[in-house]
Length: 284
Image (cartoon, rainbow, N blue to C red; front, top):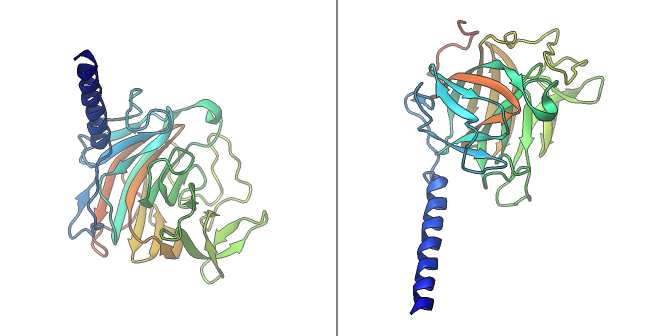
């Protein structure tokens, strides 16, 4: 009798754990959503549209890395991970407005403040180094806002290709830079710098390049990421800074990173293609 009771208790415990894990990772709809009207992914009050993933604590956020107050998403930067949309999306004009906080952490305490918006995210949470889903990043970093990074971690799956193509040139340091009309190349990993990224860029806190179009530290920057079919266009404060085509995949979830730097987001919206308000530097 005791053995049977113990077995039943173990079964119940396993069932509860399984239910908890299933609840922790929200399931998305099978078909990506193309907005027909504006979708406010951040409503100014909570993270209803999102779930959390951190490298060390997975779907839990015991350190409160992601909180909402004063109409903003506050990302403390204390860790590596992201918030991820519960749904997948396609054919949209994404608008985010962000600014940097003061604090940086761990091995990036004296390095450039770093974050990012990852689109067309798919597969397993944490596939890239235990941190992010496979995706295409619109980079948010001091001096490099608008760079593309192909977040290609995990094993390549021919059934789920991940790549972008871009017109590029090589700079003095042999890095690939977006250059309209330049050489067409396919990128299955690595990055494509925005057109004006400073060749003397240094990974030091507070770096600002000669041509940078993002707002100075502590001011709001608007970044538009237009995902139309298999093309992505990055716009920073009204300036087109980068573009990719033949993007694979052409839909997916959206992630916003925590990457050891404090930052704030006050606006995260998806607009139908051609319906978004004019891209320009936001009011402070």
